[in-house]
Image 1 (cartoon, one colour):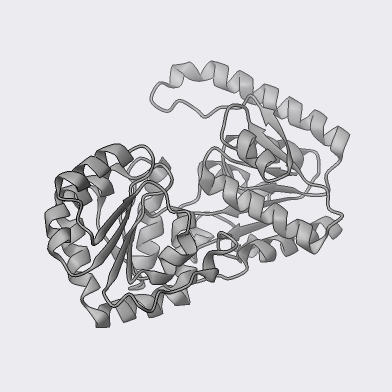
Image 2 (cartoon, rainbow, N blue to C red):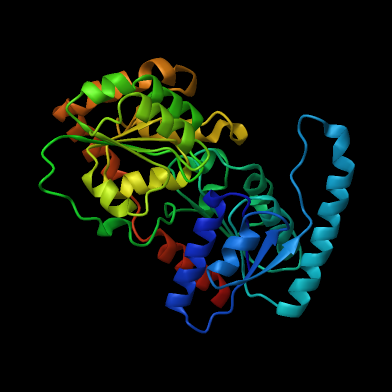
Length: 353
């Protein structure tokens, strides 16, 4: 029984673990538990797995008096999971964070089912912190997670990344430096604003720029690119279908500091400027970024300073081969290959016990 979701950062590792379990044990039966109305209810069936939705919702931190109905839905969800467990009788529960994970893993542990937690970020999420004492094992992506979890339960596995990521082909004909700017499928407003403001400067530079704006911001970004004279050295795209090749050709990457993005950058050894999103719980993207910055494995530009500093920092760094090599060497040391398989192996060990 695998539970979690709400964002792609939770859903992708959950599906990757399920796929790895199927590879190791084709007979394994897997059931997902999600939250009704959330992204996992669509993405998990697309990946070929059955999912049951719970009415669970997040707590309203700004208006605590509105949480009575949230607590009622939480109680309903726990009761529903207990019924599911009686029917399906899972050997093990896997929680990857998110609202549904809290209800599902709490119910499972209280019914005597061993649970494994996967924590993607360098600052543990609320759900996993609440469940830590009930877990048999906790798979983490960063060192130093003893701050949040019992040391004897922690296994450093890293985060699962997209399967074909390392298959990119480098274009040897490209003789100029290549800057890859990514903001995720929806885009990153601050990064896009910084690029828009610096379009004349980027157009004059002798580097190739791949600017992935995200669907939400694409029209305005494209209009700004056209207003700047549609510079030939800047590609303005809403989505990158050929991500492995784009990564392979990048000399420097500008990115948010989500758990999945950082795991990808580590695995590929890509020098990066990280701009943590301020709109996430407990500012966990800054914690993710600092884990790399403290090891001279990435450069940090804070969201509030991005408009002024992001592109000048990138243009200076991309010409500094010595610094790029240092960042490449250090970030590669932090890579955790085969994360999904290693987590799946732990799940099977627990199930067999």
